[in-house]
Image 1 (spheres, rainbow, N blue to C red):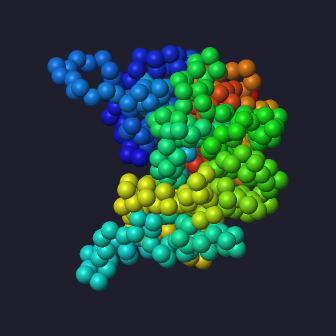
Image 2 (cartoon, one colour):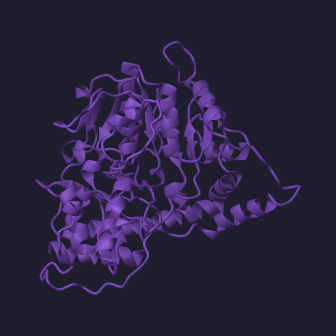
Image 3 (cartoon, rainbow, N blue to C red):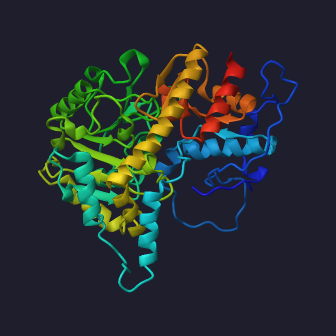
Length: 463
């Protein structure tokens, strides 16, 4: 996402001021400010446009009623907006972002050199290429299959290379259409719910329970090990499931995923399995849904290079749609997905795909494991900090996210308190669904010195 600091105060809604009462970093002495050097910080450009303007002309086109159902802005641009407001208030503060899960460490040279070589080749007659296959280049699909799905029966033409898992989630929603019912983990990545709303799969937002109608929110709590009690979950057509989970950081066990696959088979449902953090798993928990017998008949898997190789800006991911997965009339889901891909997408960048090939080389895999190891060390530092302060802390082991419990408190209030008093950006748990209320998510994506400094500030605030 592009970075900017030139956001005028006029672009900020008046509601943001309520989150920023005057305070300073030193929790013991709120009248003394800690001198913090100024530093440019990347923030996203996506902001809400003011509706308080007059125009002399309106078209005769009605607004999409589903868009009108959406509540406020998408979570992460909203966080960036509030961060911008904070920077306007404290222009000299060193704001540390452990909120939006954006990678910070450089892409390994073994990967960027391959992209540079492919880029330079485009300036030659021999090396130039234009449109590629919408499904991805054959060598990339083959190597993804070999690397991540070795002996799981996934074939090259089951794999669709894309510009990222988030984009594929919406493409999958186009395949499903508006006349389906949906279940999501609660809390979960907000793109699942928001895309369901936009596609017209949901009812109106119910403010009293903070849920949309016609979505089944599968509550995931510390008490149930962050895995829903499927005996209490009604049947839905589609089940979105992320493991390791964003935001809780929990990863499902083999036994739990077996229950999920059996549940989907019993109900004739389709699982959309988001495995974007699978390489962070360090125990025996499955890295793919297709490790579970029978999953190819009920599941789709989507994943990404974003959090493995630092490709959040490069954009490269993939989705696996097995041939065995069929609609109720026997038509292959993969054929409809292929039709959507060919209609909406011209294929991933050939330069990005060259980077993907390099990622999956022996040297590239070693380099990615090094990057992941770095972020996991950050996670341990954050976990140790909040544990030492007496908080109940979850996640971290198999994911780059730490899920911290603040019982009885509003997530947005805790977010605002931490930002105001420590100049650290986190993510309010309620932004991931009603089940996230009372939690904050702390991301391990950050330079080591920033993570250490943020943890120092957490200790000063909460000791």
